Length: 277
Image (tube, rainbow, N blue to C red; front, side, top):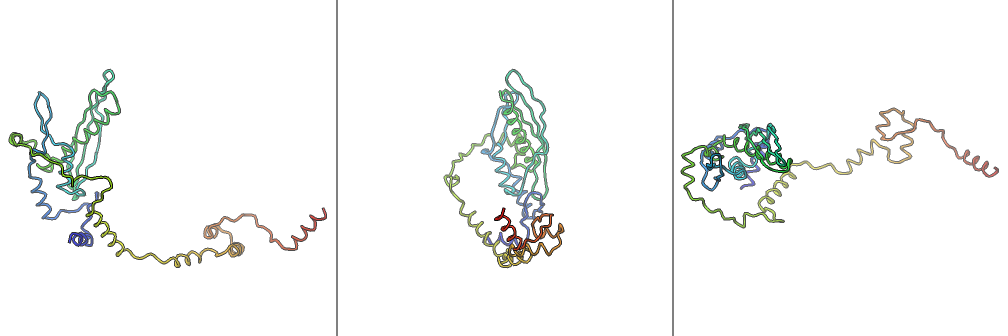
């Protein structure tokens, strides 16, 4: 039934979700997304780090946020791009570098809805200039992605701005997330569901693709425009006016100097002279 539903979508032409092609959400999708975006995050999604003045700052890690976005919008339902990135300063103190970079990141859904925000990244005290710039650039993009995604709703990080929510959720115990062996990807393993679906789609493409013309048709078409033997090629060149169009059609470059025809009697005279010299 899963394959039948997918094929029905393919035939109706409503599966165009590639980036750049806007697809309108249905009413059911809008309601489901709205309900999902209004949810607030559980304590297992929230991390803490030291902030200014010794205070703790709650945040969500980048990989968790990307997982939530894929879970909410679908892996092909959203995209992000870096609109602009600027190096604000590069300072060198002794052998160490201090760098600050800002980045504008845009997050767009498949229906064209988007949010854009600015992120900032810093690198302090590293000895390598290249690694310092790399760290600051990546940090700026990740920060901009977080700020752009949180504009869509609570489940993507907007709830972290609610102090009452933070006071409540920080008192809640974090559930232990144990890894399941079935969720691990090992070398050489192939997803059987994905393989079966691709094979099914391949069969459908063969059914809808028109058959290729037989080889005999291709050969006859080629032979009708090109001489079938070297002798026929020479006859065609001698009887055809040597214009650029004709030469291009025969796919050969003939010499410009017209050669005289060679007769057997001339061959006998040449051999006789060579014997008596």
